[in-house]
Amino acid sequence: MAGHRIQVGQIWKKMDTGESYIVTKVFTEALTTYAVLRKTGAETESRLRVRVTHTGQGQQIVGFTLATNAEEL
Image (cartoon, rainbow, N blue to C red; front, side, top):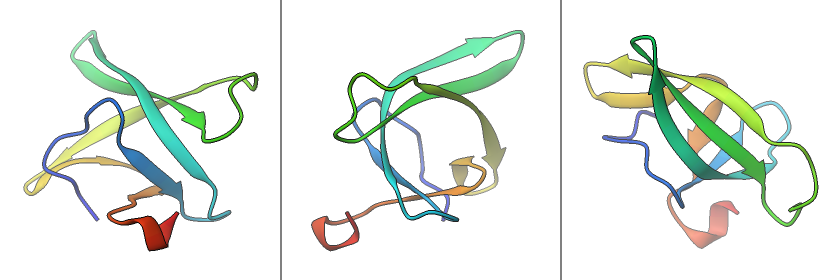
């Protein structure tokens, strides 16, 4: 599922494991947009830096899906 725009504070679920991640930072570097994700409830674990893809419907993180409501967490 593509979100219109990835924003800090959004929750994304990793498709293969079902783990929830929160977006902590979004930035552009050399014409590429990246999102920094942290596993929810694991503040001390290392963060993931993932590339954001742009589609006709908005932005998406490959391998992740946007968690739209509390039941998906």
